[in-house]
Image: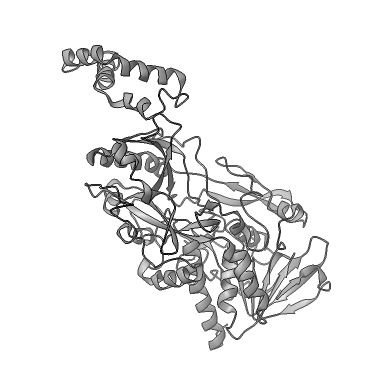
Length: 551
């Protein structure tokens, strides 16, 4: 059932078995798992069923690192949270979210990725992924391209080198969280969801080893407490560390922050619109049906291109994937000028005479190519003068040049972090400063992954890439996906993580964290499916603790 927290008497104490802070994807998944569990659950949600400016303004903060979205726009502070913002248009069923599990390599401790490694491997979480698939109403637990491709109508790109491959994403409806599960929670007698209540403090015993209550405040000034046996923070990767840092009555640096790890290792999935794929001929361009969102056997899916695991190891890359998006406003013939004999010979002559100060090999051949292919050189020069893609030379609608939209794993970085700022919100709480930072491994991966793809496209005679990024430079247009991860990372060693392998905060026996903030590494996949799987795993653990009397 739903209760307006503003109707609760001032200083009242609510008693329950489990208290969950936050009713986003993680909180709602927990509620679903606890519906018939035989104990009482109380959820405290800051907002109502619709957004309002006063509540949303509690998310204001300052970006002090890489440019990022205004922090009040990157999250939804109301029931079902950012699920409302999932915006992939599905051909049949409205809007959705792309889903896939992390890859096995994402769970490994990789020598070339500092601070990598989960407490368990992917096989451990596979059963929870399968449960998450059913919970989200998507298809079978397979993401191999051959299980979804149709050689006749939606073929895979025939890569021949084994270094890159096609992988799949599935899509779930966003409405399941704020419609389907809202009704389920409303009917559940064992679950009370308090709307318009903000958890502002995690109170602990004098030793700090046990949480004794959540202090809750409403924007109208009313305050009360919730006391439980077990407590779960499910407020997202920015608000969970904020609350832990603010809760410093006993833990002077904040609850769970004895080793200065709360808020560190903030990760996003760097997104880019960058580079262009120029198909070799119309048959390649017209065979991209697998790489757009389509529906098969009741499930929406989409193919993307990724780097093979063996190649990731050889090249020492982070995990990387890209979608491809035909853009018929870009002229195919315009890009044919880039790799003609004349243009390539001109480059060799320029490199030899201007850069190396020596006569290049095959001088006469290069001069002949330049003289014969002046038209392509002129096109290339014109494009150089006008800037990147400012004008089409010819509009050929039969072969589409494609944008790449890569989504990249971010290397864990302790200097990429959430800290408390000096400004305060309407509840008197210090707001956050977000210091998002990338490393040289991130920027290297942006470019080297494209170079590998370019090599394999050429090898398979599928076309080539025009690459715009540099391996030593953060792209100007890099942005995130509202995927806030890593700020309460998981590790069995309290000197390396905020929570243990069961998502329990180190040093506190009855406080847990649910959500992507516990991810030690991010992979490239949207965090929703892994979040739901981990939350189900946590729910099983909580049910075991309560049933066994260990709580």
